[in-house]
Structures are given as C-alpha cells and as structure tokens.
Amino acid sequence: MSENTVVVKMLIIASRGEVFEAFTDAEIMSKWFFPEDDMSVEVTNNPVVGGSYTLKMYAKNGDIYTHVGEYKEILPPEKLVFTWNSNFVQDTLVTITFSESGGATEVTISHELLPSVDMAENHRGGWTGCLNRLGLLLDA
Image (cartoon, rainbow, N blue to C red):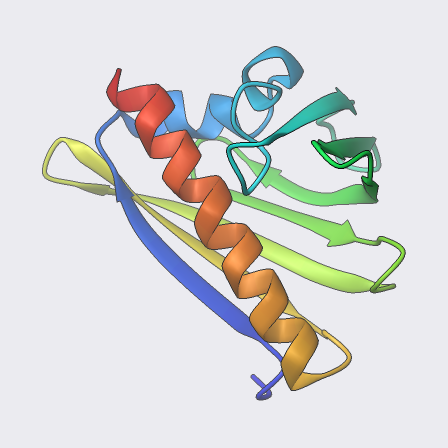
C-alpha cells in the first residue's frame, strides 16, 4: 500500500449481514452514505459483479458530488470491491471487508490509488463521516 491509500476501520453494533446489506441496498444507502449532517444522497446501484452504482451527494450549499463505479467482487457478507470515480479522482479502488467481532461487525475500508496525500486525507474524512452515520443508523 502506498501513502495515498486510506484505511478506515470502525466497529458497527449490528450483524455482519445487516452491515453488508447497508452497503448494497440503495434504499438503506440513501439514509447514511454521505459524510456530513447537512447533506443527502441519491443512490442507484446494481450490486452484482460488473454492475454499477451512482451516488449523488447533495450539499446544503447546492454543491453536488457525484461518485460512480463498478462492482468488481462481491462475497456476501464478507467483502465488496468496487471502483470509485468522481470529479476529483479517477480509477481508484475501494475494498471493504466485514468481520464478526463479538456480536458486532468490524468494517475495514481500504481506498487505493488516490492521486495525492491530500486527496487521501480528504477521502479518509469522507469515509469516516459515512461510517459514523452508518453506525448511528444501525444502532438506532
């Protein structure tokens, strides 16, 4: 892994199946897959190998951040691998693993091939914010 790879881990108090579903079901994703409270997201996806997804994140100030990619590997409820493209990065790769941990699920996100250290840190903040929101949703 290079210095431009982000790894974010978080323990989510939910079953591995529930957490995996939260990453693949567009309706559930629309409730948490944005990093900040003053945002929302529109999700379309086809979670099969070769299928695509689109995340349109809407900021309160009117900015729209669009992320698109293709699913490369899907092993329910253990692993997801997909490309991640936006106005800021192209041809990056995200690997997410889901591990059981005492009645909870440890989610590990590895985001590779980011073009710079600054862009890696921006994505670290984004992934952390999204996982925090997911934890709040599933813990409710």
